[in-house]
Length: 458
Ligand code: U2F
Image 1 (cartoon, rainbow, N blue to C red):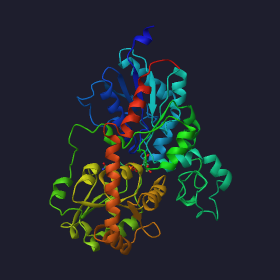
Image 2: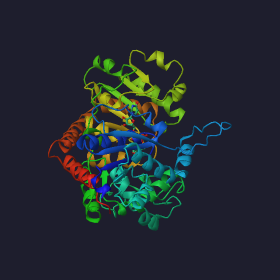
Image 3: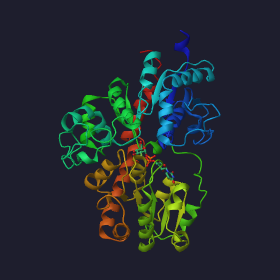
């Protein structure tokens, strides 16, 4: 038939918010580069697409396709700025906008029909779109493995602890789920047993967990050996669970990262392992009072720093802070984080422990100091502190001036920091080995690629 003669066409569907599109993108590029005769489409909202690198010459078979964002177009009401509102609007226009996007992708490819849909695992409704087309659905999970496992066990957790906040059981360990022995009930992402179970993120995670068993395979942004007990348990229930990370290692960009604030030349002038890099990710920022405490702590510690802080939050810095610390560090609206973390001058990473940041810290061999805020971040800190030995946190979670000074001293100059750094370096070696030829992530990626390129109808 005509369809059988067509080249494979893999359509990636991003969750078009925060760091999600950028996390998925290296996989689309890696697939396009590994299969030059395949068509690869990357679907996201126009806004998300415009934050991605403009088409590189190394993957001419990769095409961007815009999908509707659900924002009302009447000029009377200004477009909402609140991310949760934007997410709700977008979700309410699925799956129609995705179906249109898939049709547009085929049309843009001269009629080559989509033969596989690979989506952010959050985009569970992609599985219905795939089913309708009778093509495989291959979700890619961008968050951490322990949180993924927790989401998969949501019903069990709710049977045990209810959904009202698990009153009295917050300190209980999740020892009844393989690989979650170090995690407490209180570390679970909100929306499982506590918090708003109807929030967009809770619903996305819950539906994701329900749909995952229908997937042809699942790719995870981790590497074999990081969570052995979870890996074993997932593999026994779902054979095509494939750790292929760190995603960003699979097909590194061919261009130099933009460094508009001059972070890298500044780092060139600092002593080895002396600098703390600070960032709380792309969604939330700690409350203003705490930013003030952190600022005072940084200043008092004397540690050289690069602080990536959204422009809008910089107004909460204490008066005179920037002038006082001009010779010590820099506050920037954006930093080329991976390059910064890989610079020899960086000795520690103060992070919200979002999964991309955590895996980038691991990949760069930098010890982490965690200030988790939401989602999988509390579990990520527990993994670092109690399983991997490459990170630690603050007493009582929130940052105080004294807490920051103590923690930075210990991280950058103390014995504890040395231990964490040694473990961080071992993990970095493991991450590099996983994506090297013959490594587990590389082999798993090849398996995933073969599944993606199969053009047989289901
Ligand atoms: C959500 O995470 P976030 O987007 O808030 O945070 P990360 O997962 O750590 O991703 C932030 C990314 O932005 C990059 C950085 C990471 O790749 O390198 N970045 C940068 O390049 N320069 C900057 O100045 C600041 C950031 C969620 F909150 C987490 O809990 C989830 O684990 C995560 C994955 O689903 O999504």
